[in-house]
Image (cartoon, rainbow, N blue to C red; front, top):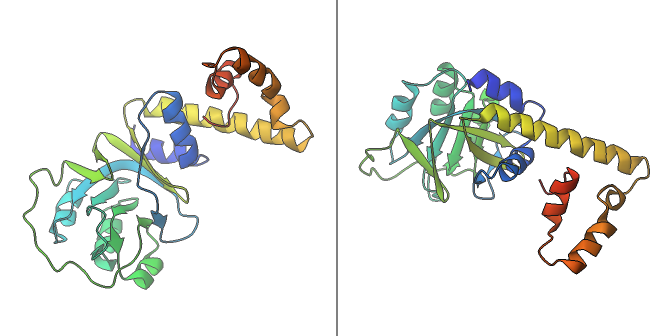
Length: 235
């Protein structure tokens, strides 16, 4: 999928729905470690991953931007460090100048007031006044992949970010994944409407029937029951 299609497909969705769609399609749910937040409220972001591993200097970001496509998202691996900020106003300005949709950082940012004025979406784990005081050797795969928590992401991945967090998914099959997330969203909206009309979620999901079947078959899980009904709540 190209960046325009990814952004358009995510417009009315959420990372929660994308995570549910991954689960439904037996795709490993790759989420950023808890705590990542958008710099500006109600910020949303979606696009192809442009990876970069930070080793103490911004040159890796500038090098990565040299191969960027409009709408890419710079995904920065700073190993979740809390002793330094790895991006600031100049890097974010340059990201906007080369057409990036935004930045997702496994680490911290600085120049918060300037970043708020710039307005380009930035997701990070918070602010730190100090930039790097180190300069480590650059990894030979610094521009090929980025670690984010317990997993790696690269150019073959998409990234989705909103107030609930950040989810990564493989770009191959991305259109089908987004459509599945949209179908889950439609089911949830229909269920919410029915609750508002007086039909409880327990009634819609035939919860008493589930309890009866579970009593006779311990392997009959609620998720299996939901898939049988085509109902949404856990996926």
